[in-house]
Length: 193
Ligand code: AP5
Ligand code: MG
Image (tube, rainbow, N blue to C red; front, side):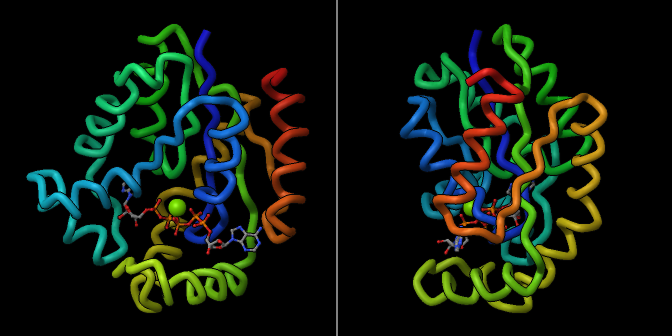
């Protein structure tokens, strides 16, 4: 059965950082909705053109477009054994669609790793990253909007997954190595990995 690990958290919480480590350790691809959108922006595809206004304003791209992009990615052969999903789902409808999609592969969400980080730390981390990331949405006013959108539209997913016994809360303020250690413990407890 394929394995699906979800990385959840605010902008700058460390989802991408930890996903890259898990990808190497478990040999399953890192599927990040934000990275996929940025690839489309870079290639100026129709999807990229549609998504640009949302991303540059720190808003969520509409669910139907986002779900279809993830569906296509998970159908690629390298994802046959599962994936580390980073930044998806971000809304309840996305989470519901994901349940159906993973069932098509005979899988399910194995665990949701929620990286908990204070807002002051998020601002500091992303301000640092903005120096080199080239991400237009790392500018302070767009970052503030992304955090607001996370709190108003995405954070409620914690309850969705807590009710299903899948939510592992991780102290994301600690060092990268410490956070990875907490994640290993959660993967063992929740998914037997
Ligand atoms: P996305 O690319 O997913 O951005 P995000 O969620 O805002 O998160 P970031 O990538 O900024 O942070 P991260 O948690 O990956 O942290 P990182 O590891 O880089 O989404 C971008 C946009 O795309 C959205 O705003 C939206 O428009 C659209 N989108 C994406 N998904 C969507 C969806 N499902 N539905 C609709 N729209 C969607 O770490 C941050 C920094 O901190 C790095 O410099 C890192 O080196 C450092 N760091 C990490 N961990 C630590 C640590 N433990 N200690 C110290 N420093 C650390
Ligand atoms: Mg990221």
